[in-house]
Length: 186
Length: 237
Image 1 (spheres, rainbow over the protein chains, first blue to last red):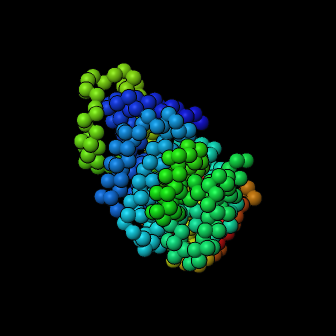
Image 2 (image 1 turned 90 degrees about the horizontal axis):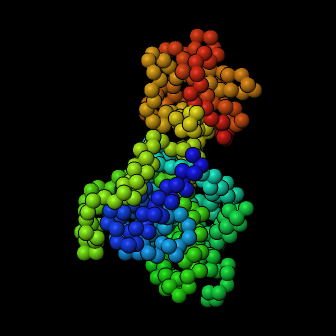
């Protein structure tokens, strides 16, 4: 099943091309194919369902309007779609102001992720690469990067969550970014 | 700020994607990207690097009202509705195939998520430390062994309800040096863990395996039925 992700990507690419030409049916098909995964991402970051629904809605409207831009973007189509959702979700978090990050909710979310029985995924070598490279970071920098990616936390929120000064957090993120890039290039 | 410094550009792109920038910095960076397409490319590269985490995030069906709201917003620009074109039908069939795939995590995606749990767990008051994940022949995780509930204990639980078929029991084994040692019967429901105590604890390098046995377990002290699930012990208590 090594090709399955590539086949899925090719199909999404074709759909996005049609959406760029104003094809409503292609857009509806694209939504059917990707909305659940993207909603999962929005919920992970936003947590409040009604707000996550709005973010999903805004994101797909943006996809409709900017489908032509995808041709210029490199990378997998699902990543392009996810980034649109991610950026909107993070902007929504910023608009809502700093949240007190509830540790127990974080753990609940993670346990939900671990024990959930409704994943869709393809087998791919790249999944292992990220995990391997995260493993090569030191513990606290790794946590900082993961909390940021999972929940869209600012430096300030990370400092509160991890009990470290802002300067340390920024330094952890910078070092982790450098090391992840090098490791993933291997 | 020297925005032509490659290391700075890379860091800004990563921080934008990660979300660590506050509001104003995000807007400023988006302004930079408008005039500088290679910055946008750096961002998409970071998105690609982390995309595994989003692929491993469980999907959730959004309510119908979301699609209705989207349709209302884009209606003025729509192509006149007509019969479904052949190419769309082909794409829909292919995508139905993906969605119809048996929904269970691949071992790799589940491993990533459990890894995230174990990495972030020390932040939480009662961290679930993962000792092993047992997967079936398709690589689908069926059981998880975690430290606890008390010190010196390991709990083994189903990740989702399992069928043994007929009148059979799931039995857990510790395989060390090639020899299976019985550890007891498992319940096929996630909220009924089996707790192992000090005498029986597996060590890193051991393999934990589950076999299907006659009701009550193997009568011989060794597995008599098929091994349905197994995994390596990845850390010590």
